[in-house]
Amino acid sequence: MIRCRPPKPGGKPLHQPSAAKRAGSRRPDELRVGLFNVKYSPNLGDGLLSECIEAELKRLVPGLSVEAFDLAGRTDYVAGGRLRGTALRLLQSSPTPVRHGLARALLGRSLSRQRPVWRSRLACIDAAVTGGGNLFSDADLNFPLKIDAAWGELRAAGIPTAVFAVGVADNWSETGAALFRRALAGANILEASVRDARSAEIWNRRLGPSGAPRARVVHDPGLLVARHVPQVRRPCTTRRIGLGLTHPTTLRYHSDEAAVSERDLNAWYAALVRGCFARGWTVDVFTNGSPEDEAYLRRLRAILTETAPAPPGGPAINFAPRFRNPTELAIFVSGLDLLMAHRLHANIAAYSYGIPQIGFTWDVKLVSFFNLTGRSDYICTAGRDWPETVLALVERGLREGLDRRRHGVILDEVRADVAVLADTLKAGVRGNRAQPSSKVNV
Image 1 (cartoon, rainbow, N blue to C red):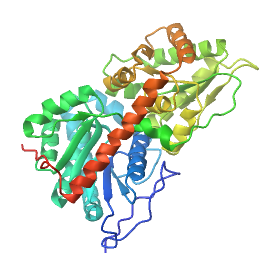
Image 2 (cartoon, rainbow, N blue to C red; image 1 turned 180 degrees about the vertical axis):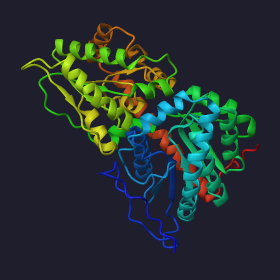
Image 3 (cartoon, helix red, strand yellow; image 1 turned 30 degrees about the vertical axis):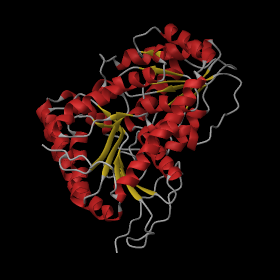
Image 4 (cartoon, rainbow, N blue to C red; image 1 turned 180 degrees about the horizontal axis):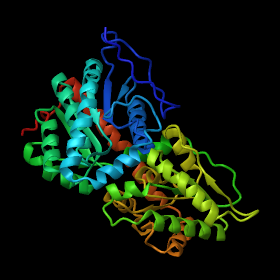
């Protein structure tokens, strides 16, 4: 017998998984779905959106079980390696052929060990979902290699598969594009959905000629976090401003903009914090959990303590310990009065809880989200826009809040998006879809 036990998550998840069962002992109407993404990434935003998909599918389909298939082979929420920042700097400074060669060598070994594990677990899976997250992007062949390996196993097992709420970047190398096309070749694709119009255009242009289904646009499932994790408001006599940090090397490696030096960014953050204190606001500094971001928080903590000390008896500056799982991140965000951050899912969580946000630009996915929610006025560039300009934007955000009607409509639309996915999976498993599944050719 093959045990179909899902990996044990770290900390309390957004939903409670059902008890494990053995293959062949399930009810005839039971549906078991495999969810492929990077759920256990040290960046807890990936886990947040993954657990929201799981929780919402289980709410919609009684008896459904969801098993996590992390594309990196992780089985728990862990802090991640401390050498990631060094690796990013090395990759950034290397020519493309060297970066691709390193990726093929390192990921190739890892995926060759992971594929048999996936293969055995897929014996218990009825249908699969790949999503959400920015999975169809090509940073040194990372996701092209992982998607190709995972979908090779799904194809071999004959498992119908949906692509849901993914981000699609237009940064594919020739090798990366070929790997994505090969991954989808001959697969039983139930449907494809992406999280913004730009991703849809890229998906349709890049993969449409090979026969991939046209992508529909849906909302990011992380927007449902407020519907699955209750808001927790901590007592505070001052306004609480959340300041989310991202390592400058990460910004340089992934950013669509000219990078700001770490020295200049440090000075800018210090001026921003001093401005918050001058207005009587408490500042809570945090990260989404990536080890390089945590390393930057530790360095900036010393700088802020020295150059922007909290006034005696006045508002405080707090440095949050690393959150152990997405629920802890969500609870922290839910208690803020306003959030400022680069990371997309910190901003998404804040919006879900009805908390105004200021997005620090660095790539198009964050801009797309602020445009979608009608908050494009609340975007600025850390290290470039004057701190006083940002502080004035904070004052406006605290005063105006969110458009509550639009907020409610968007959250209802997210639930409807997942409901379509649930119906698609059920129909795909029953095999009675009105139209045949798409087969992608190369």
